[in-house]
Image 1 (spheres, rainbow, N blue to C red):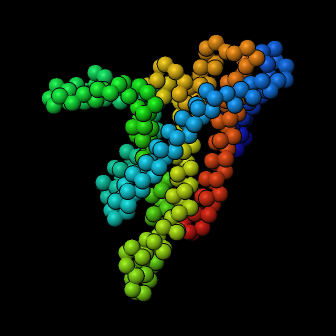
Image 2: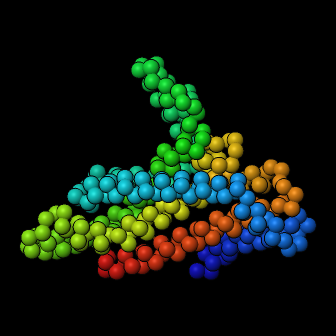
Image 3: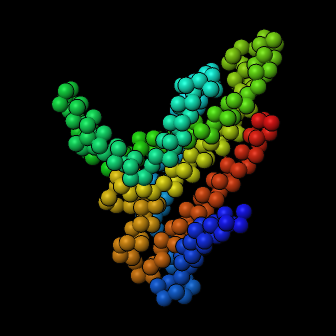
Length: 273
């Protein structure tokens, strides 16, 4: 544990403390709340709202699509080729993000992407008739789902496998239908896992940076891009350390979400024993 503890301290805890601490200092290093009060700026609040709705939307869609994939995998042999292939692909795609993911979407459905040109030349369908949506906020939804759905498959499949066959048999013996089983047994048991997965996917999207940075080169529509702008662009006098205050806001949101996820995960683990 000593090397791991040193790694966490040097590369995670210390940079986080320095980033958050800088939010309480002015340009000269003296204590100041000017950067923190800057979080109430309407532009900053809109940025946080953009991050929240984007994360919430992709989390909900990721939960729905990922749960459907998990339900389909549940009826397959755990050691079968299809199940093992999907598990392996989900593990890879859950980590396939950042610049490579953005490049893949630009190459496929960018303004001159392969799919875009094919649809335009063969069917006269212009994906960008209404604007360059891939390089704006709506364009982040599809790339985010590319790693949200596989992550949902990874974290939720064990919960589905934890449903005991004896519960379905008892429901059938007592005259219950499949709908009754899911409404009165399956969903109540899976609810903590579903909610915990939703929070995890929200945190995953809320903290994503590289994919958005590669797709959106102009503007700071979400908080990570706002932090980039605060570090690399001109700053308002008295708010030189606004990036630290933004990091503090992100950490508070992430701490609340992950605390809720941990509590729900502990509750869900009781049904897997």
